[in-house]
Image (cartoon, rainbow over the protein chains, first blue to last red):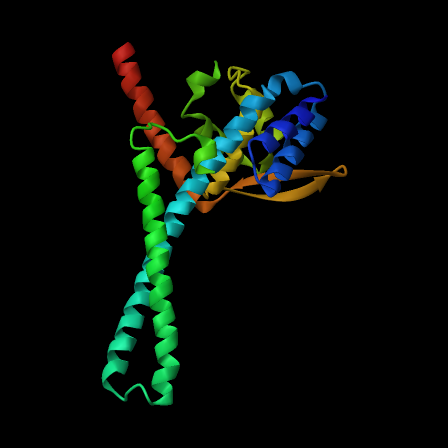
Length: 144
Length: 104
């Protein structure tokens, strides 16, 4: 089995996404083609795959935190709009008006969904923070 | 010089090397070796995670090119990368001056 085959196996084992995986293999394959026999100097395939996986996980953890923040902010906006809409509908022009009915149900749905998104996102973040409160560094498989 | 000694400096060295001229991974490594007269004895594979990280950070950009029927990823420094390199060069000069002042 070649060095590149070992790297492919190790990248698979660490769950490196397919598009990243292909790019890494192309680049390292080109490196080996430039200087046949340089595999020893490339280092241990397992260590290299771990480095790639850790760095990708760290980057994804940052994106996930940002996505959670955006989801919570969006949920808050939907909630606010829904509350204002419902409050206005309760007074005028009344539930019998067809525009009121048309607005009432999306607003109600928005409230229900926004509450759940906020609850799930917040609960998951809190749970992770609680479980890992003493960890200095998160393992790659945890944050991938 | 082992990889441990290079920790924290590899990104700057790569930026400085790519700033000269866009290049693919193997060429970057060769330039690094030539300019350091072979002083940097790092596992050659370690350059690729560093290149990917610099690209994610927006300091490098890359694109595929085909040479002799082989696909290769060519890296170039972005505007943010050029600014970052200037800052790192300044910091490095201050650091070496301070170390030299203490070490004698």
